[in-house]
Image (cartoon, rainbow, N blue to C red; front, side):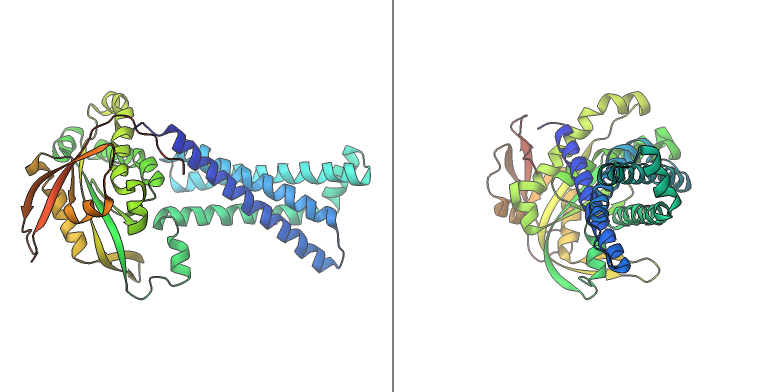
Length: 360
């Protein structure tokens, strides 16, 4: 196992690639629409739209993947909005001017000054610029909504996937920070809140790489979910826990230097059939209902009593099969509060320190 620099870069590159392809497609579509409205088949215009759209989209992707998350994640919303405005507006203007002027020089044989002047004075630049800026902000708006509801949830909301309750198979992991009360009392409310922010931020790589959904943040606890097939694939639900441990271990010195503490945590894993639906009017949210969640929460609550960092139900463990880097120890069989059937619990521990993270 290791601290995830390669997966982080891979996820960032994927964001840039998606943004670039979206920009390319939008630029071509915009150029084709212009051709239809003008009644002329201007292939040079389509080429300009392709290149400019790709460059603008890639630039927005670079900003969203590399620039803003790392440097401005604690910036107030208005300042962040203003910073994005300035960067993407200037970037769009630059690429439009560079691509169209170069195109006019190549296809029409114009001098640079003449090509530049013609593009500005004919009014085409203003129209193209407004559309490019609109595209940039629409893309960013979708990205921001995605961060509120999670990847893929916006599409599910639009197409009505969960507007009616439906049964699904999910794996849940309840992750809870250890000694949080002591740390909070020592650090004070504001510093402790920053400590929690950093903790959740540093878990992001493991969550994304193992394709987990963040179901809820509850105080210092985070609840993750996987569709059954996704969570079982490559033991993602187990691998996520150890990748999170490695991510925090890699930042241990930074935590100790800034806060005097570093976070440790425990988790419970269980899976089964639940009901999922959208609820709420003032604030819409996807919620899961079912005994599986209650059982998972109670499994996690037993970690301290059983002196384990990671507990898993026998039901889920049997579905996972052997995991090369993990040993499973049968601990106890309990009748959990509110349950009619007994639940057998296993403790999971790593037996190897090296694991090759599968390329996503």
